[in-house]
Amino acid sequence: MSTPLATDQVQGPVIHVQGLEKSYKELRVLRGVDFTVARGGIFALLGSNGAGKTTVVKILSTLLKADAGTARVNGFDVAARAADVRESISLTGQFAAVDEILSGRENLVLIARLRHLKNPGKIADDLLARFALTDAAGRKVSTYSGGMRRRLDIAMSLVGNPPVIFLDEPTAGLDPQGRIEVWQAVKELAGQGTTVLLTTQYLDEAEQLADRIAILHQGRIIVNGTLAELKQLLPPAKVEYVEKQPTLEDVFLAVVGDTHAEGPAMTAAPARPSEEQR
Image: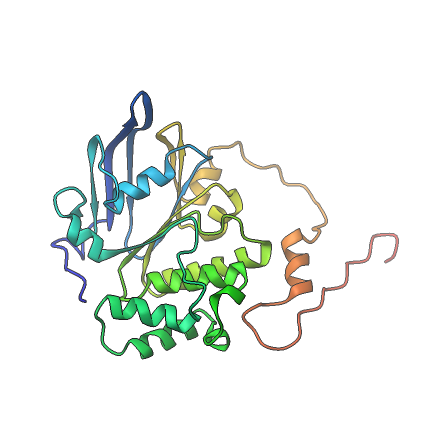
């Protein structure tokens, strides 16, 4: 299946949202949301539970109609050209949509066949290699860890090479190792040209992944910019000498090691001597 070309596919943002509103009876979920997403970047929609993040994603993926405002994805209006939008995107929801009875490879082959693509086996093998799942290709998904399932779920979303992918709370419920695995997969997606819009309530996740971050609060975008731009909203930092201590992430990676590399885990670096020890 070929992805339809948008008339403005080369120029302009790949996602353009203006004045988006949505209410459920008396509850106003979205109150005029505006943002754009550049092609090939990672855009994080950050907000607490109930802020309206999933509602935005459902509107952009044509699963829900807005009450007011406009939204375009890959050059197509989500209301007027919903079919073209659906052929341009892939959506990965908050819970992995994988068949646990099948193996990882069988899941990918099934999706490729449903999309009527040629060489489904090769497509599956390429994606398994891309997401470091080749060694587990023949195992039932029921034996996969949470991080492996999430990576397989994202791999299934890429069958057919959609130019835009929506990740709704991609690391919800994962342990630290699973989160790091998914972060690496998302970074690789953007590095290969896929436009990623992800929703998250984790501050560190947005900081680690996103080129631009928009904070959605009570149905409105209250700030939108790069991490450096958002940091400028606070008073300048004071320069003080502080001996840097390892973070919990440094300790975790040192003990567990790189999950995508073969061989023994990394060893922790020795602590620097104190002034008294020198």
